[in-house]
Image (cartoon, rainbow, N blue to C red; front, side, top):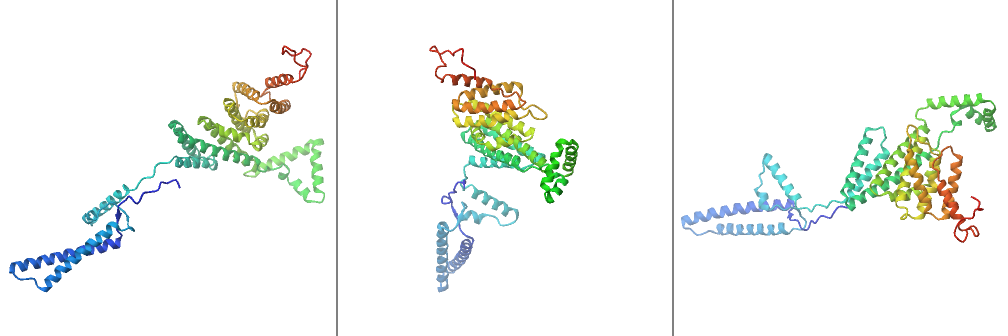
Length: 431
């Protein structure tokens, strides 16, 4: 649909094969008649004899044949149902017809024909479709495949070259392709985390047998409760469960965790590229609407939490840079949805997601963002933070500065709390 329309009307025409064959036959016949008339005329002149009736008939036939040649030539020059070509008939008649020479001449005709077409101008949409296609393939190719790194390198190269180009259309290509990839990858991440997990009872054959008997559900739940008073019951059940899980190839929970970790890592890479290309505003809007992903991430494994926590830290940092240009609802949603993850998420398994310096900077960033919101929004965010902060073992993020500032700002609107000079009463209780 994006190809330019070729201007065929401006090209010269080449006659059809049938018309060309008729013309060539007529030309040959006219040439033979001309030779015959010339020979007869020369013989008559040498013998000083007059033309006979047959001589006059041959001469008239020759004239009519050449007249037919002229008519066919006019038709060939102005025939509307012919194909495009810039080769004249004289050039075609001069082409050799044997061996390799005919092949090279035919190639010459094709090359000459191609130069007469108007080439479609290059379009940035073509490059955008190619980049979108590669980013979509990344979600489908297994991370263990050697072709995965190849596709990742190609996408990275296209994005970097478009950014270095600096042209508005090339930057828009990166923006659109990365925004689409962010939406698709976050949806796949949510689906992999939301997929059903294997319950503990589904891997123990005694519970399955008990549930198939009358009042089996009651007996199974009772035996499960005995684990509290008889630890050996729960220990034996858990040992049998672990053996059963190890014996089953392709355990569903492991497959889901690996897929979620892959998509989370891809989403982190896409987010970093969006920051480099200045297209992070698309990610901020989508992240502020990902309530389902924010909730289910709290139940995911440590690696997935680490990747998503890193994404959240990057987006909050970018949000602070444009905090006065972003709508209030976007800032509120990001903070209220993703601060619980920062409280509950661990630092990962093999390495910390955020360094100590990055955590301190993140606390300052969140305090600045919270201060730009109305008091009612601050109340919701800080109340939820206090609940999560008190019930987790983590000491980060510590937003006590924002909490103190909100308390002081609340007192300013209470009648009788402020002196005339604007100083707080000493008897004012700290909330």
